[in-house]
Image: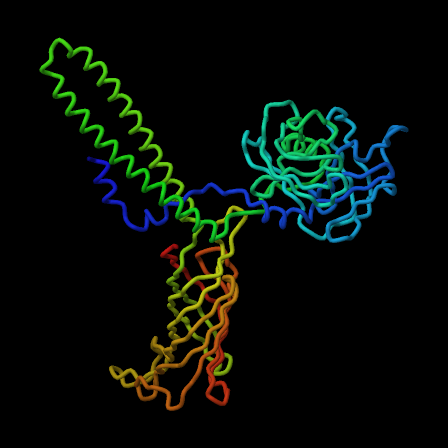
Length: 474
């Protein structure tokens, strides 16, 4: 029962974080993100599809821009490229990639496109992977169809289970991440199963050969809502795994009972033992499979937990400043704060790099004070403090922090007393962080003390360095 003891040691947050990482294909989301980068190409002899891999480069098929009878390719001024927004991109140059005449790919250089181009998938897609195609079949502009990869081991092509037609030639076939996995080659019309597309790894190799820029970074990454939905799915899988584990233990106990019952029957012992050993091997195999699935689920949970983002931060700041109003050097302005984080900003892989946050901060100004040294009956310089403050703070995208609060206490060096201000004194501040994507803080801060009539009594400017400890994900 070692597995049961292991399950009892699992903490609730580990079970809560165990969610699946498989991202389903969302055809609506893909269309909204990718359709603006698909273009309609029109020549004197017909029309076809294409897509931008860079603000100045459009990929299409050779036969889309080829003269039908005279041979060669249309000149740049004879080709019209239209975007989904209704604008036209002026063609500056035609690049048919003639060194690779057996690969039906060409590139058009156009005036700069004001939008996001489509990234290219750098590998080979798996058979069965769901995809969508966006193009202009039979001049039905910006039409989308959905299917999957049927075959991936041809020399240059995929076989596609995706509906395409005349006019789809040169259009993109896109995976769940918004990456182009193939370019539709519409001239190969065999049957319903005879749809083909040129593989993205072949396209990538040709673009590299001709020095044409492109990107591979996915357009679509899981949102916090997607991760939460997948988290529930993983929890259900874990419950099913536990149920299967319990059933396995029941069968193992039954096996031990049957083994004991078989021992008195010496004549049938050898045959029975062989059968039971085979059954035991099968149970051991299933146990290894279940253990591997457990480890895989825990690895998935760890990867997802890193993308959820910690919700709280405990922060410590320290740094010298200068009081412009009182013309006094502040040895250090020390602060500690507790923040709640929200509004996460993620990188291309879905990891949290910055966030908005609000919270409460306590601060103290540490200065050198002139005080009477009773031991020697004369005046000297000692290390002390002058203000204690408590403020509410709001930070935007880990870059700019605004704070507002009260001066709670102040030190009177003349009377050597800690006092509360006779009239309310307010503190306002701003902090600019130069390291927004790091747990370390380094920036410039400014703080001012004002009364209810907004008359200043202290204005400090200085450096701030510190560290933020993030915790509690969900």
